Image 1 (cartoon, rainbow, N blue to C red):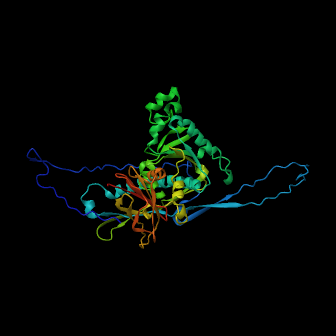
Image 2: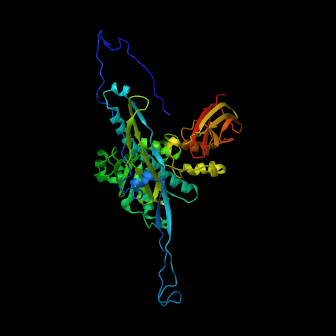
Image 3: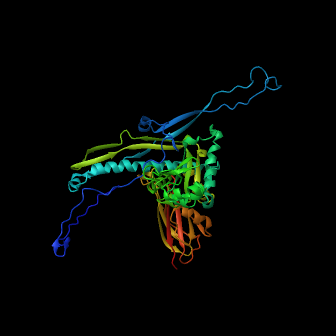
Length: 474
């Protein structure tokens, strides 16, 4: 809940004197513009919007889609001693399987514009706020799309069903990219996809990885004859023109359009996954190659913005409303690209919290409704520390499921960083959780050296996570 910032700063009479002369001050009628990237995945590349209509997205909580299962028949030989009669002895009945997409994510926080504030500023605050909201919506949808594919693919692996992933080695970017793209040629036989069509594919990378594609891959991607043209241009492929601010496009590799997704979008993806802000940006996941055959999205924009009079006094209230959902139906339609071999935080989390896994639901969920734990570490000592952890809902019910600790030389900076430190740590511990919280629980199962850090990772029942670190000084 946001509170109005109340302040009054009036300049003293000599605030604008220059060489003894009072100088005039003015505010420009122009404003510094906010810049947000547009939709990255669209037009049937990487995501399909055709399964959910505008009305479906507005009026439904969930939309189901039927798929007719293919009939798996085998050819026979007439006249053979087995099934060789005039008519086949085998019969098949048509069957369907149903997949669904939840449409429960809502963006509807009101924005209040008091008249007193508007009258004192030359800028049209209503128009500016409306544009900012509309532009920023794209980054939120980008984040939800990115998060959904990551979650579906990596949770499939965590459950032992496997997933498509390729370790992108700097020394052989082109080879590894083609390997990843070829995994989509393998299709998904279990779900009736012989191969994922080329025209449905898109590659999406973190913005920082563009430099790696450009510098480490420029010679192999374009060849010596094109290297100079690629180096001086703004794209990663010869003859292409980048559209980084429009939709993130930076060129083609192996016939696949490549895009970068903004850090703002990644920050929203963190929230949808239950990670901490900046987790994906700092992680070993560099992006993915994806087909729209495997992924669907629905967005309602019919009632996007409404403007009403303020209730408490003169002014306006901007009431935005957008409802949306994303689903990844077939994990094999997405190929995760990583900068380290075997990177999968959800698999590591499933192992660490294996005894509490039945209480945790990993799902796509907006950050505004997530139960992020709040962790406090006090009294760090040579054998442990005291922990207070809580994650309460609107009815003051605790939702913390489990918490683990480890000792390291440096503080854990993200969930993914904690998982790395935990895997390598010699000293690890568990924080006791009772009734959804840890209230001043002291652990004594660690060995902590002078200057070492005690790190804690806590998780709530909706998969929301938080970390905290404290140094021990003897």
